[in-house]
Image 1: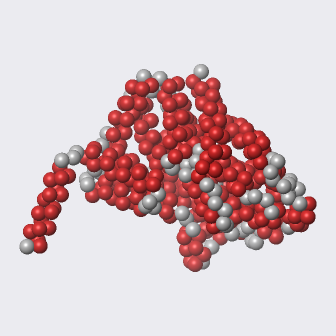
Image 2 (image 1 turned 90 degrees about the vertical axis):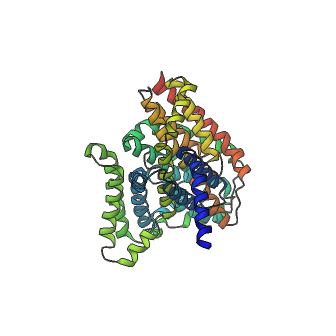
Image 3 (image 1 turned 30 degrees about the vertical axis):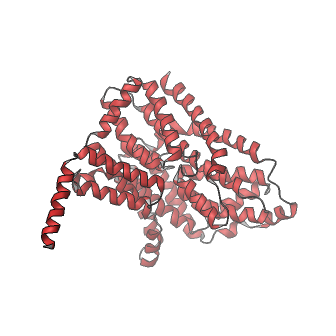
Length: 446
C-alpha cells in the first residue's frame, strides 16, 4: 500500500514538472536562489551548492555540462592567492606595515586614517580585498585603541579603499577575476585601463573623508608617543620565511604581468606560486600544510562553483540570450548607450546585491550582445568592472569585504549600521560612478 502511495506521489511530481518547460524551471530556481542570497536567511554557499544540484536533478543541464561551466581560472586564482597570503601573514609582515605607516605620520589620527586607507588600497590591488581587510583591520583596532580614537571612521575608510584599490587590477576584486578569466584579459590590461581612474577616485575619496572626519579625530601627545615607541621590526616573527614569501610574491606578480606573452592562464601563475611557496616552506610538514590549506576560504570557493552552474543553466536554456536581445532593443545597439547602461545598472545593483552573482550573470549577457552586432565590447567590459567593483561601496552588503569588516567590528563591540554606512558611502559611490562614466566616455566612446 505504501509503495503504491509513493508511486502515486512520484507520478504527480512528474506530471507537475511536465507542466513547465526547462526554461521556466531554470529561471525559477535561479530567482529563488538569488532571493535567498540577498535575504541572507540561508548561507549563500548552501544556496549555491543546492541550487546548482537542483539544476542538474531537474535535467536543465547534465553533470558534464555543469562542470564545463565552472571556471577553474577564477577558482584557481583565488585559491593560489589565498595560500600565498595565508603563509605570508604568519611572518607578521602586515602588522609591520600598519605600525610602520602609523609612525610615518607621527601617529596623528587623521593622517593615520589616510595612511591605513592607502595601505589597504595598495594591498587590495595586489591581493584580493577580502584577504586584505582580514589582515589589516585587526591591526587598525589595535592602533586606534592605543590612541583612544573612534575606530568607525577608520573602518569606513578601509572598506571604501579596499573596493577602490581592488578595482585597479585583475586580482584585486572577484568580479575582475571573473571578467578577466571569461574574456582573456591580462593583468596588464586591467592596470592600463582601470588603474588610472581608480587612483583619481581614491584621491577624491580621501579628500571627502578628510572633510568629514578631519575635525573630529583627536588624541593626546602622550598616546601618540606610545605608538611612536613601538618597534615595527619586532612584528616580523620569521625573517627567513618572509624572504621566501616576498620572493614568491614578486615572482607571481611577474607571472601575472607576463602570463599573456607566456601563454599561461592567471590561475596557473597563482597556483604555481602557491605550490612553490609550499615546496620551499613546509616540504614534508603535513600538519602545517593542512593548516594552510584549511585557511582557504572554502565557503567562497564552493559558492563560486555553485554560482557558475546556476548561471550556466540560464546560458544553456537561452535565457541570457533573450536578456541580451532585450538590452539591445533598449539601447538600439549603441555602444555608448549600452556602456552607460551597464556601468550604472552594475553600480546600483552591486550596491544592494553581492556583486559576484550579478557579474556572473552579466558576463554571458555581454558576450551575447557581441554576437548580436556590437563589435567593440571593450567599453562594456570596463564599464562592468567599474560599476560592479565601485558599486560595492554603496551599502554595507555591496561587497564581501564590507560584510567582513562589519563582522570584525561586531566582534570588537562596534556596530556599523546599514543606514549610517549608507549615508556616507552611497554618495561617495555615486560620485565615483559619475567620474567612471566620464572616464569611459572620454577614453573609449569619443
